[in-house]
Image 1: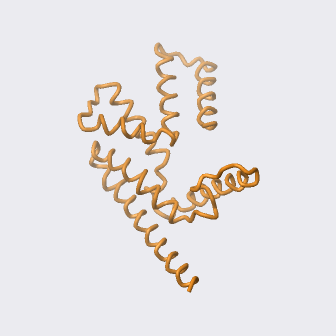
Image 2 (image 1 turned 90 degrees about the vertical axis):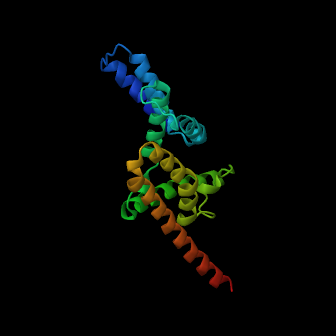
Image 3 (image 1 turned 60 degrees about the vertical axis):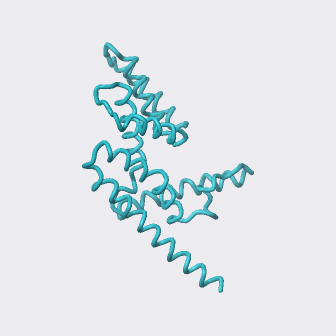
Length: 182
């Protein structure tokens, strides 16, 4: 959440200091705040529920419907790495996992609780990605593709391919571990 707050403060400072003059400046700031906060994964289910509730009868002229769409689209942009080709997404994944692992190492040193998905002793790349793709990315991108069907082939299919790739790697890891235990 600290990152979100920092982004927000920089925006507010620049908005006012640069003489950003709009008749509806507060409305603009409130919208940007909403979108920044929409990237917080703690709100993922809430935002997806709102969007799902609006999607079937979506009205592009309704401000609430549009804000729900904007929140989901900013989430898609924020966590879309696995939609990209493996040669692009995997190095980013390595960086993300290393960040998580470094944080959990420090938490362990300080005797703090560690989130299971950040623990290098419990997480592998395949296990991290399978759950994230299956339970977060695919449901979100599938919902967006129901509103914008043209996104199915360029977003949903690559996610399914990524899921299949990681499941195959997990199976290989499991076979290796099983052989090592016998």
